Length: 134
Image (cartoon, rainbow, N blue to C red; front, side, top):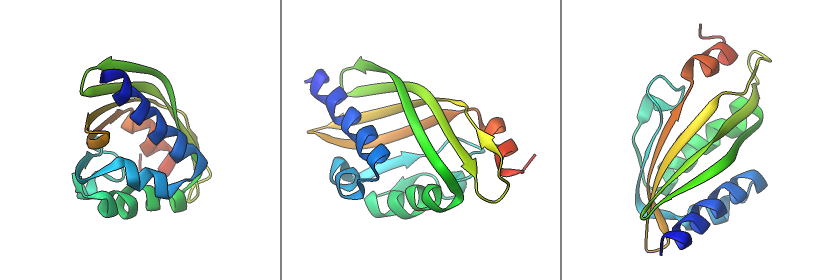
């Protein structure tokens, strides 16, 4: 089952990279809890509960506030019902023109083929510098 969970998480990143909102929403459990890292710009309403809250509170903002934002997974660590993803973010803040490329770690829980929990860890100082908030 755990390899299936890794495959589910891989599909999430592939859908995000392709801008496939329909697939992203289909992979999220109706009761998902999505936690943005403390001090990340979108932690203001964290945790987001439900796919619609994630779509508007996180993905919608990423799509309008960043040029070519990307989450680039480099490694998927299989821990059964939990998948840890290590990689980097990229993108340029629209408001400032500043680019970023910080490391990221995501802890994602999967149950019955759906993502039930997401927790983000990243270098929030690098993001704050890109947004001009430092």
